[in-house]
Image 1: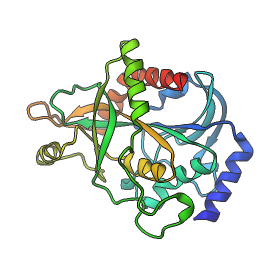
Image 2: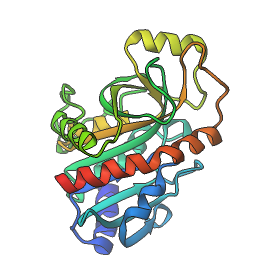
Image 3: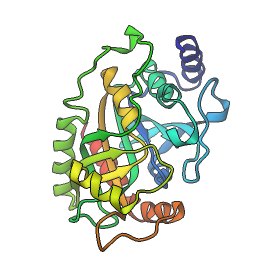
Length: 269
């Protein structure tokens, strides 16, 4: 894999240089952040050697270099999921590439189902911890160049950035929640019994992404900040039928608030 990552990194670096140290991964229906970017370069995933390809609606499938709040950022407009058939090594491949490109801060977003009864559809939840119900992406051969074999996850989500985000939200009257994100493999949505079980485990929201990326990033020393947009509810009495299109629709409604938070957070770094 190291040789492939070097080839991928070399290809991207020739096109964008070494400007950005911050990267953003957009979740389902959350690609509108691009509209706030001053775009310098767009590279299709399909043109990047060895790079995975997005196959899900709501994930555009391109790497974008641009400026946000006057600062250079790399945006992965579309992510990859275990349920698409990718291996864990393939899922975290882009994160390894980001590290080689010089990224030291990663902002992530996702669409998630809320199981906290205090949540409402459209809420933005800042992730302060996670529960991983997916295979760990670090299982298998260990390459010391990526970090520790047994990386610590005490601060998987950077507490300084979380504190800064809530300070920014208060000043700008942006309503934020805080909670624990639980990741499952998908692609099925949860049964009522699963919603109840995951809530008892301590989850506030459930999704199908983000945690493998964060685990790989933290192994390599990349700081992480992540948010979930609550697009549906798995709360007794509030649970309804869900479709991918309904998730995309609700994510798009709340996207402006999330984009505003990311813009102000990057400006404050």
